[in-house]
Structure formats: structure tokens, C-alpha cells
Image 1 (cartoon, one colour):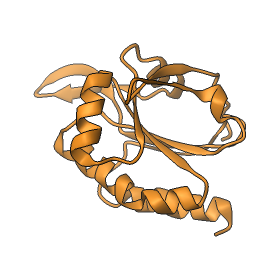
Image 2: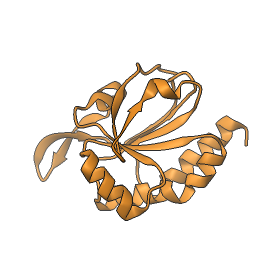
Image 3: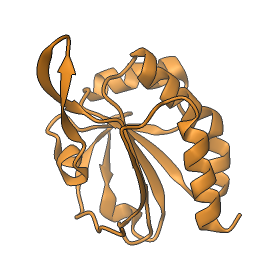
Image 4: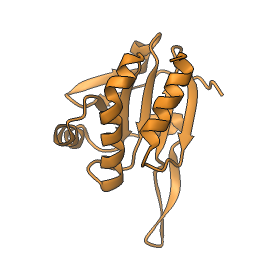
Amino acid sequence: MNTIIPDFEVAASGNQRFASAAFKGHPYIVYFYPKDDTPGCTLEGSQFRDLHAEFKKLGYMIFGVSRDSVASHDKFKAKMNFPFDLLSDKDEVMCKLFGVIKEKNMYGKKVFGVERSTFIMGRNGEIVREWRGVKVDGHAVEVLAAVKSLSGA
């Protein structure tokens, strides 16, 4: 695998910017989800929230990504008490780099949307591990297990 993702910058919750170049030398996790404050996305974020301290102890930061606005992210983050930032990819910069926009069937209509996906990013901006078409329940535990194996923990 080890696909290198070119540097990118997007808006983040808390009126911040996320620049991937700032994370060179630091591994991190990005998980893409379809929409703030929907049942599956709330469950997924909550499971990452509940394991956040363990990821942090292993040296990994977590970032949730969707096409929602920063204002929407701020509300969702506050409501769910997420200890990590949510990245706003309204222009689909990250979605295109990671290839997560897929054709979906919504009530019989074909639409393009975010395929729930998670990526462990290495110290040089490379994808170390990826999951696509994620089933939410238990996924954060699976990602933590992968991080532990990568870290030798």
C-alpha cells in the first residue's frame, strides 16, 4: 500500500485550518463519514471518542472528515463532546485525494456520496492501512487494534 497523499489544507472545527504538511513526522487517523448528527455517524464518532485516550497514548491523533460546514461540525463536536477535530471538506479536496466519493443508491436514485472509510496515515503522509465501506459498530476497536500492531504495543 503506502500510497503517499499530496499535501492538502482544509477548514477544521473551532475556526482552525488543518494542513497535512504540519503532521509530517506524526502518524494520525482520518475517518470519512457522510453527514454530521446522523445515527451511523454519531455512533462512529462516539466510538472513536470513547477510545481517544488509547489512540493518543499510542501517539495517534484522530480527525473526522465530512462535507459538512465548519458551523455544522462545531455543533456536532460540542453535542457529542468529541475530543478531536472535525475537518470540513466542502470542496471535496480530501474526498478526491482519498477516493471516497462513490455512487450510491438513495431511495432508488443514484447519488454521489462519501463512502464511510478510515485511513491510518504514516509519518511521511503515506496511507499505512485503509478500510473502505466501513460497518460502524466495532470499527474504532478494529482501528485501535491495527494501530497497536503497527506500534508494537
